[in-house]
Image 1 (cartoon, rainbow, N blue to C red):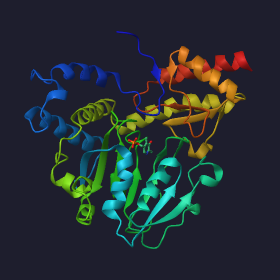
Image 2 (cartoon, protein in one colour):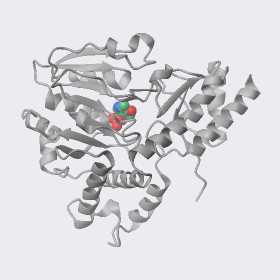
Image 3 (cartoon, protein in one colour):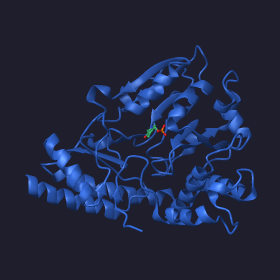
Length: 362
Ligand SMILES: *Cc1c(COP(=O)(O)O)cnc(C)c1O
């Protein structure tokens, strides 16, 4: 088997090596059952153990209070853009959205199909280079909920802490690109969702953590598969779930627990991003694009002196075993995604490469 290289892709993204090695074994034969994980019935004993452990490890990892349900759904984060308003926004009700980038805008656009959307704040005027300060957020009087995106994958910004919202308004978070990258106080939220392919596992499967009182207000005039209450009643087994996706998420939870939990994971992530930002801050050649106080520890966006040199950088980096550094097609430049599973060696190798490239092309 060939050597692996450093993968800075924004998603699907790098997974922890021990998770992949365990998956190799379990693909062939899960737990001595003589049947691989892909081949087990979702109602059988072997998979029941997988999903139950995934839930309990997830709960332990994020100290999820008992009054929250943990669901493993399908359709990625994008289906949640629709499911959130479908379930929780009445026809004449109002929901507040904070727009920090393209994903947040997509979420708000879906909600407009179900009810009224109030934009409580936006960093569009500065090309999404920051998280709006609290003084720039203006919520409506009684929103059905407030939606924000904890980490802006495309522009490389991240909330330092949750926005303070009107009393009683459930806070809803798209945490797709920084879920479990740091400790999270779940009790501040009504609902958290995250597509798995950045920090947790393969694409397609999505983690949803929902406060149980919200299940009672779920609308009944929507398709069965779209109802949170149905998935909660059936423990995420209403239909055949993405069994492999749930299995890999479960293995990732175990790996994060072994790392020492979310506090240890956060410390490691801060050290990793620090290596790259420290270099960017002193370079006259490369330049970070996000405002310093809004920088993401997951997606580090930067530019070179010209588009030609950026293309050259991306090509040569790939040849040197550093892949996935091209920025999102909507913004250009470079982006280093350094999710939980990226080892610090990846960050130091990238900085060494950047130093050499700067010297050779100055
Ligand atoms: C990647 C991403 C999405 C889209 O996820 P899909 O699973 O492709 O639907 C949504 N929100 C954020 C913040 C993301 O990073």
